[in-house]
Image 1 (cartoon, one colour):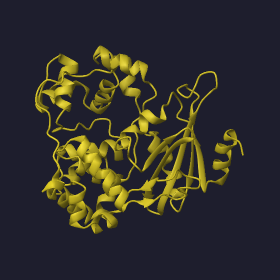
Image 2 (cartoon, helix red, strand yellow; image 1 turned 90 degrees about the vertical axis):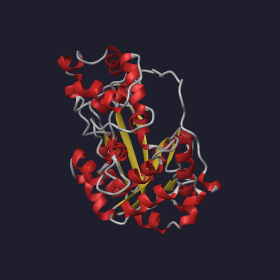
Image 3 (cartoon, one colour; image 1 turned 45 degrees about the horizontal axis):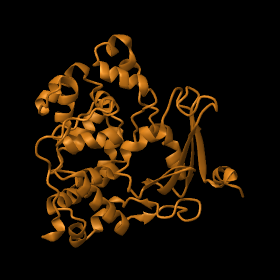
Length: 332
C-alpha cells in the first residue's frame, strides 16, 4: 500500500462515514481548534492524514478522522469545500449523526455579515472577517467533556491547567477505538463522568489541581445525567442552570457553552486577560469587565464572534503589568 492509498483504505475500513458540504469557505483546524486543550491534548492528533479526535457518545467511545478538501485549483477554503469524516468504535453512528453540528453547520453568520451590521463593526474586525470567512463556531453537545477541563482552568494559568489536564488524561483516559492500528498511537478518550468521580484525591493533588477545583468537578458530575441534558437547552438557559452548581460562575459557564452550543454571544466575564485585551484592541486602553461589556454592547447577539475576530487580527495587547503567578499545588 502506498502513502497515497492510505486515506482510501482508512475510509473503506471505517464503521461509519459522512461527507459534509459547508456551503461556503471552511477551515477545519481554525474551527475546531477551540476544542483542544493545547497542542498536547491527547484526545486530538493532527497528522498529514487528517485531524483525529476521540470522545464518548451515549453509545460509547468513538475515534473520528476528519479531512477537508475543495476544488484542486482553489484549495479547501474555497466555496466548494467539503469535510470527510470517518468513525470507528461503538459511538460511530452517534458521532457521524452529530458531525455537521460539531463542524458548525448550525452557526449562521448571515446577520453578522449583513452590510448594515458590518458597517457598525470596528475596521479591524471587518478586515479580520474578510480574511477569515472560513471560520465556524463548533458545537459539541458534550457537557462533561467541556466542563471538566474548563473547571481545571479556573483562576490558574493556562500552563498549570493544561499540565494537570494532561496528567489526568494519561492516568485516567482510555485508549481510543482503533488506536495503534487505524488511529494514531496514544490517542485517548477523555474520562466519562463516572471515571472522573472515581479519581482519588491524591491523584488530583499529583495533577496540581487544588481541592477547590476538584471539589467543583465532583459536585458538577454527581448529577451528570442532568448536566448532559443542558446540551438540548438554549445556550443562555444552559449557562444559567450550570451556575446553580456551587463553584461554577459566569466565566466557566460562558467558556462551556462557547464549545457545547457554539454560542455566538457568550463572553467570559472574569477572565484574567480578556477584558484588558478587548479594551486595548478597541480603544487602545485596557479596561475591566464592565468596560468590556459596554464596548461590546452594540453587537449583543454576536459578541463572541467579535471576540473571535479580534483574536484573528493578530493584535497583541501590551504586556506591562502583573502576571498571574504559576502555582504548584503538588508541593503542598
